[in-house]
Length: 507
View 1: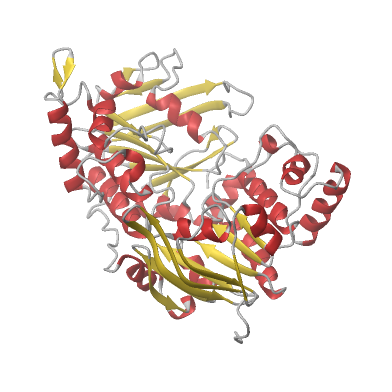
View 2 (view 1 turned 45 degrees about the horizontal axis):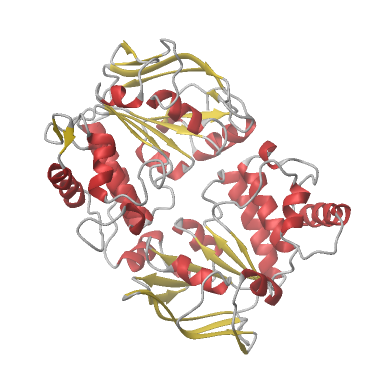
């Protein structure tokens, strides 16, 4: 790429929270038309940096230079006026509103809804991102919702687009479609700051990369000249552990969990009804459920875990019907459950780690319960075991859950659930938004637990993850589960097509 005047230049940007340096004198440049990767582990400072670029936070030191002039960005509206747009990892859309209404909310006043509808359909069509302006968000797939976010950003005429984990919820086919759009935007001179933990796609897509570690720039490179392993090593500062497979092929053992003829209507208009779900989970086996978000994954997790009771005998644990038993009673039978949402579901943000131990281990750890009371000393001992065994990195002895990075909190939650005698583990999105090092640790833990005899059900949108750890894979589409097929007899393309086709035939 020919180097001219930088579109964006950061000079010594720092952000402090008390004595903690979230960003420490960060400098980087982005040229017009450049797809520039911003890489780093969870907690490396990526989110803080892009929030300052988008005006959600203000730097304590340093200078932002935009098109050759120093600027201050006090709020997102100023960022958009300058030509900086952002597509967030977690969509900011109102489910009950139409596509046009959601887009209009982000645009300056003055245009009628009819004008907005016409423009968004024209631009979405021209970029190969077809959208119907009158469609309601809750009727759209995850891929279509991301189109809405991108088109809404494009209608603001950005010169720089910040994209945060844009493929984390997409099928391989949808990701390829997105890459075509990004390359076209690059050819048109629009710059893209691309944040992703999927290093193979960074290699294929991005022309330059800046790597952050502990809030500092520790390296810059051309991703095409690297490998995913070398990029990951730059991010974490050490070698990345590669998953060690089990030594022997998996043979069907005892049936530990069975779901038979399970159908459940959605509680609200935005839930997905489960339709005639059938599967068996065997001892020592990892079964993976693939699917695009919103196709019944959370509803399946709730039904299996006991967060939602079916009232029937269509869920059994070790042969015992549990459709009427709540989650804690299912835990006492040896089944443990790890939800998708770390903060607010798997952990209480304002509670300390030891307090979060009590939430799911009371009644399971004999030293935790002292008659009608809970021993906080024992809870801290359990917390210490989890921290040591699962390499949970934290800033104080017993911090609140929300102070941990996403990867470290996920390792803590996983450790809390699987330590001891977990015979059945059901985990929803085990490495969602987790950096490469933490993801490898979590996946290896699941493989090792299966090798020791645990029966594990992994619900994930990450096909790379499922193909790395699962013995068999099924797809969940519109509340219907396909038969499980051996991982070795299928591939990502087949599973991806099945995820989007709505069929429940064998992959």
